[in-house]
Amino acid sequence: LKLGGIGNSGDGSKMAWALGADLLDVSYTKATYGFNPKTKTSAFVMYNGAMMVNLNGERYADESRPYKELGDMTLAQPEGIGVQIYDAATHEEAQKDPLARTDTLKKNGELYSADTIEGLAKAMGLADMTLSDVYDDSFVKEITEKGADAFGRTSLSAGNGKPAPIVKAPFYGFRATAVLLSTYCGPKIDSQARVINIFGEPIEGLWAAGEGTGGLHGAAYMSGTSVGKAVVFGKIAAESIAGKQ
Image (cartoon, rainbow, N blue to C red; front, side, top):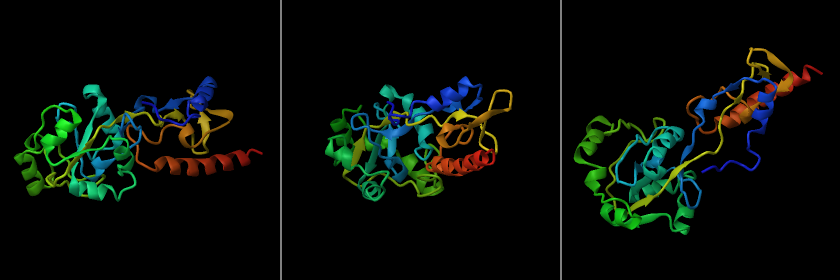
């Protein structure tokens, strides 16, 4: 899926490239995990404690990883789907998080719930899945004794929160896939926000800032950094342009 804005079609990069601009981070273009295929809305409950399983009921990722990395892992699963599964305790916490609320999913019949994991799997049409399959004894022991689970997850997100057993009914689940929101790649710029060509030289009269540039994010993306990128380099570009007048 592609959910970028109507005007987000890469025209700036194409025009700069036509003038010889060097482009950075094109190979790092990645899709973001967490979007329901039907509603095309996101819910990042995995950062509140949900576990991700594929359509065979198999867990496949450390859910605390950046959502672009989770996107890569999910697209490698059957039908590109990663089901988020969690319990009542996690659901209560997630509803307090604007990025994890599931109101839209529930309204559109995409949020499933049941009193047992087996019942949830049946309701969602997943392969037979029991609580022990998703959350075995050794897994619980690892969390309790070492603070890390079987996939090496030690926190819920970026060092915050601790993984907890999924044990409190009712249990919840919804399908999610990865979508392309934006590419985070673009023309190379220097410290004055001037666009640099493939020979390392500034292109006369051409500046760039924000998501119209590459070289900041790399292989992953930290939420909110694109805002700082736009504000900081936008100011630098304006000052650089003013100095040329």
